[in-house]
Image (cartoon, rainbow, N blue to C red; front, side):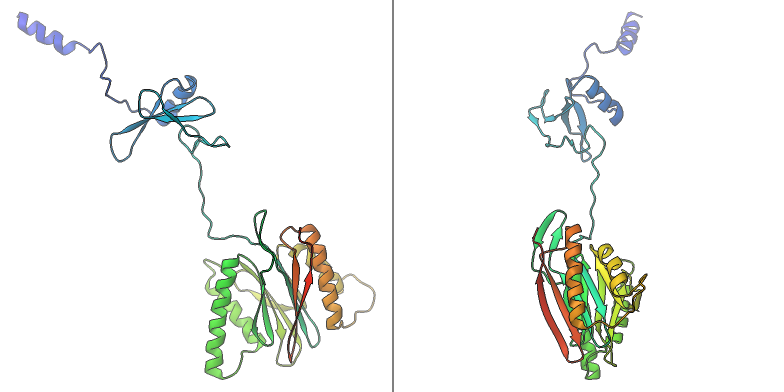
Amino acid sequence: KKKKKKKLQSRNQTPTSPNPHATTMTSFLSATAAVRSRNGEKCLPIHNSEGGATISVSFDGQNLAIGTGKYPTASYHDDVGIDHGITQAPWERRFSPYEFNGGTTLAISGKDYAVVAADTRLSSGYEILSRNISKLHPLTEKCVLGSAGCKTDVDQLRSVLDIKMKVYAHNHRKPMATPSVAQMLGNTLYYKRFFPYYAFNVLAGVDSEGKGAVYSYDAIGSFERTPFSASGSGQSFLIPLMDNVISHKNRLDEKRDLEAEEVVEIVKDAFITAGERDIYTGDAVEIMIIRSDGIQKELFQLKAD
């Protein structure tokens, strides 16, 4: 009987001192609240997903300390107070395949010419990456593509269009006409509608009759022929001006046909205006005058700040 009583007593006994090597799993929220309430006096066990190892973490309200012993031996924190999701809310990380590099393009059609222009600034956020990047790309001797937006997507779009232009020239023994180029560009953009090129395009040239032609596009290939078109970061500053000066809207004076030289001066004034209000437009404006006999180029300097 005495032996049985001793066995029962030993079974019902609870250990007076806990095992120092044992770890207790707690919820993340309760552990975080406990650490903050104790002002970082004790460490928060963070369990490794690949095994039973733990690391000690303490939080004093501002800094995060990490160590392997009873007390932390090193402190890891950044200047903005982000603890990277260990004791505060998780730090969200995002990836975007697109980058907006700014820039403005403008195209205007005339009776026997088309003028297309774009600034030469390449930006990223508040940084100027380059002051001499052309956003104009001649596809034929009578057709020029102007593109603003993501530089890498613009370069890829140009490469695809150049390949298609060469294939057409080899098959038909002649360069593609401007209306056909406009349709090809629309198809190319539409093929990428589920992962679009981050490029804002205008197409300018002269058609088979020698008349100026300007085409306006959206991101997935919808396009129309218009008297003028603008795209990019300074679009909202140029379109109201062009509505008044080129389309002659809300005006009572007689509308007349403008010569190419007059349109070039209007383009210069327009880009000066856009450069005053848009930080992504500046440095210089590259202007191309397209006629049936070829393309004439001009460079006009803008503000560099």
